[in-house]
Length: 240
Image 1 (tube, rainbow, N blue to C red):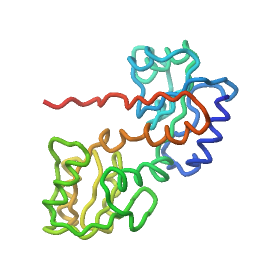
Image 2 (tube, rainbow, N blue to C red):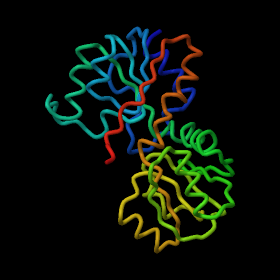
Image 3 (cartoon, helix red, strand yellow):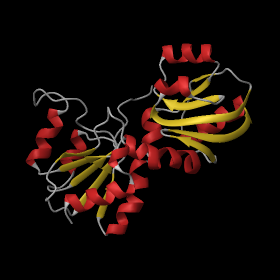
């Protein structure tokens, strides 16, 4: 099976045309004519993962390894340090980022991980049906996401509606029409703004909310008869 065969399948599953204008999903490294026997699914790429994978493999990642314009390739810096072994080993890479968020990831986290029904969707944002006290709701989210601690901004005693954006979605807060907003990478000034807006927020983590990418996509790729390796990659953060 060629890279183009797999790309076409992925495009039908989660159209690349849905990606945001600032995104860089699609074939980032490789050749559409390359024959592929091994597919690796991961949120990101790292050196240890590249070392462990055989030549001529295809990486399908959530985050694009090439995001902005490249003006030089210095092989001791990111991302060229990862691109160099990929080229040596003839490893291709397709990224499925904001298109996959919209078609699969938000829905999976909402229904399969958190266990709530989606009552509306607006692009990236999934709205969940909730009718629970804030403290109970926060405790349920913390347990479902496997978080030791959960940071939050509490503006409500009772949550009747909730919005979800996996990854980093705090920039969307001004458009959220709900009591509570679940997303990752909430910064200090995001929290201050949320207080002014009267929007409760819970930080569900960037990695923690996206680590399901591989298992979601694997169920679809297995239908093609491909050998699929799921590698959730390593969370770059450590907690002490």
